[in-house]
Length: 320
Image 1 (cartoon, rainbow, N blue to C red):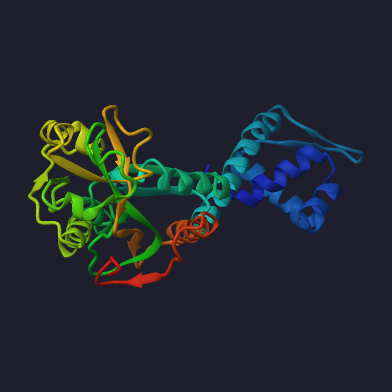
Image 2: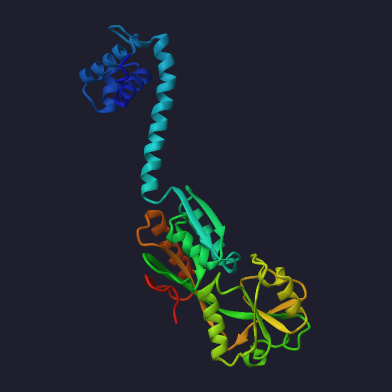
């Protein structure tokens, strides 16, 4: 056996085996009957066995033919599935999409986007990983992840981004703090307290956006950067938690960040407050799956009434 049997031979054989009639099988395959007979003979010659018994009135499967029919159907089904999956992957409707996201987006923004992706493209497999801003940018830039979600990412090179929303950031105070009953809390009342926040090296764009806004509006207190770098942020960092609990410090957070706020603490809006943007970013050479995700993310932003979205190219990812 030389191994020259082709898919067309298997399709021809399955059609005849199921119809048990050459004329009907030829019509089903939209080929002339002579060509169909030739393909069956070629397959039998290739295998060195008789697959069909032909009489003047009917066609019957031999035992070898029945054995091949079981396998041939599976082969053709597998090939059809593979071809369809390949086409859908090329269109971004199947395959793997890897997403990095920063901790403050895990409780509202990301779940809404994921739900919409599953609704529109159920055959896309997601791989998501929580990362700090700087490492998320590096991961997307290196191609280890397809897209990233972060607030004020500092982008360069061939990275592009779209603004999905703007959220005002509030403050976390001890529940028994003198300012805990204020809503909003005047920013001036925080001017000499300690601000606890994640390290600038991990989220430089976000750090600069928030701290820069506070400094511009009269805040002159010290900065305490978290030592325990987890998604729990201030309340899983012993030093920061103690300082906030004792009323000497405050932390910053979005209203959508905690569900609920940890016991013993409260979230309050602050006035004035920076409106911090959320960005989706990707490489300019990204394929259809990324473009599909970008499109649905902008649709979700519009549907949810988030800030108007616009495409931003290259050098920086945050809006001033």
